[in-house]
Length: 183
Image 1 (cartoon, one colour):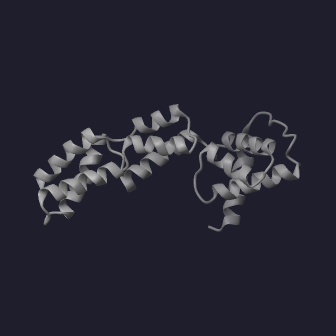
Image 2: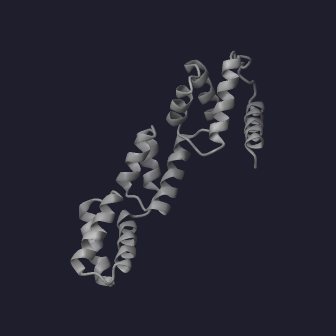
Image 3: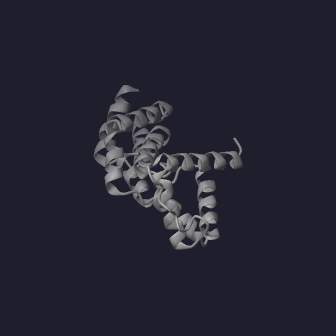
């Protein structure tokens, strides 16, 4: 799907959602060229990947769009369901837990850095599997790949990997010993 087609599809979705309301709010900036340009840029940015509200705000302001137009566009996108921090946090946690096996604390840090509210972060993190099991999976995989090395060297490598992924030391030591015993 081309960017132009995706942007057009997003615009149609916004228009359709707005038409469902009983009495659409008059938008004083609807004919403002700066507002239109900001909205077009926001839709173009969102066509590439999901963003948190704060990330999109910073991106639009960095491109020198007027602050009032940016805020109006962000509000419109949130009402249309195209910008939702709670869904963003849930998707981010799910994808990064599966692909990168990050710890809960590392996921929290990343979401805070992206400007997601604490209540959305807590809700998203409550939905994920047990951190011990994720850490054990990472440790077991590393233990299997280091079978020919001395036990101490294997332990250091596994602990280092778990630390880089943000797992607490107490969990890391426990799962490392379990993984080494199983391999």
